[in-house]
Each structure stands twice: as structure tokens, then as C-alpha cells.
Amino acid sequence: MYTKDARRAGTVLLVNPNTNIATTEMMRSLAERELAGTGLAVEGLTAAAGPAMILDPVALAASAPEVLEAVHRRLADDGGTVRAVIVAAIGDPGRKELEALLPGIPVIGIGQASVLKASAGGRGFGMATSTPLLAESLGVLAAEHGGGAAFAGVELTVSPPLELAADPERQFQELSDAVGRCVQAGAEAVIIAGGPLSETARRLAEQGTVEIVEPVPSACALVRERLGIA
Image (cartoon, rainbow, N blue to C red; front, side, top):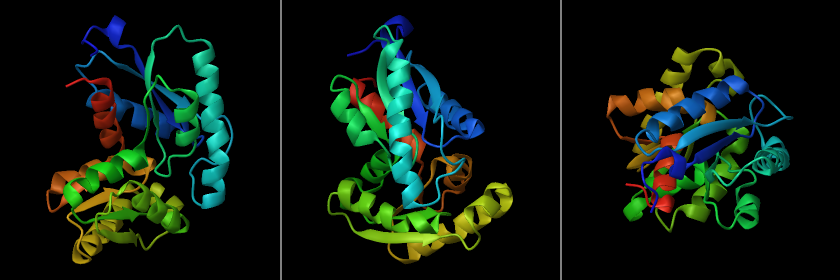
């Protein structure tokens, strides 16, 4: 078990599969808060190529090699301090490949961690998101990690993702409406499906109307579990 000594605890790499550096820093900062007191530092890595926001299955698949390359470059200069890797896009691009390449290092996807948390105990869960073209991919993710729990489906915002990214208040309201529809469909927990939606997910969680599962904090909790840190 790792201690809280930072020299022994090492670093968690948070890899953003899109090229938006501001999104990387937002998620890195959130992960840092979630892992406070563990001695683990959080280092953000940003994909070198690709879209600023992953909106469809083609972009999701294309981002996987960028995730692998970013981690490979970082580990080439590492002296054994990296203790875990978080793939910070809801579709977990490159997670399985990294897991196979890094058998001694936990590789956690924010999608994987979210579904595991949301479906815990077999409860019904749903997802709210702003990316309609990824709805099918999210359904596959739910089936892979949901453990047979009832999946209430994916509920979408009315406005397109890039419009909402430029209007946080509108994003909050439309995702709140989508959460309500998930609850009506039988969800006891709702995942806000998207790394760039992390700040809005936190605001929704503070409302307390239903359990909101936040992807980055869920991944951090799984990192703690895999590393044996309370």
C-alpha cells in the first residue's frame, strides 16, 4: 500500500484525448482536488493532434493513437514515478491498449469508472450528454461495465455541443433537463457523460435531486482503490 509520502506516491497522468489545453487543465485541477492528501501529483497530458472536442465515433477512434503516443512520450522520460493513468474522455479511447502495455500501472477510463460507480449494487442508471453522435458508443460502454444493471439510456441536450460549450448557463440548464428525463426513465444515478462537462457535472451534483456521477472524480476514486489508498 502506498503511503501519503509524495516521494513514494508518485504521479497520476491525466490524458486528455482532445487538443483543448484549457480542458486538460480543468480536468487536471479537478483530479488534483479529488486526490488531495494522497501524496499523488496529477500531471495533465494533451493529445498532440485531433479535434478540440470529440463529437463522433470517428474522432473517438482516431484519438486512441494520440493517447498512446502522449503516454509513451511521457513514460520514456519517467524514472518510475508514474503510478496510474487516467484516460479523460468518456469513451475511454486507448484505455485497453494502454492497460495491455502497462501491466504494472492501473489505467482508468473516466467512462469505465463512471459506469462502475453508477451501476453499483445493480441500480438503474442513465447518461446525460451533449454529443448525440456518441450515444451508441455510450450504450456500448454501459453494457461493457454495467454488470447487468438496468440502463435507462442516454438523454441528450437540445442544442449542439459546441454551442453549449460556449454558453455554460445554457449547458447547465439543458443537461439538468436531460438528467430529469433519465430519472423519469428509471435512473437512480445519472452520469454526466463527457470530460469537458466536468464543471457542469459538479454544479448538477450540488443540486442533490438525484445522484450525479461525475466522470473525473469517479476515475480518481478508482485510482485510489487500485493503488490501495484510503
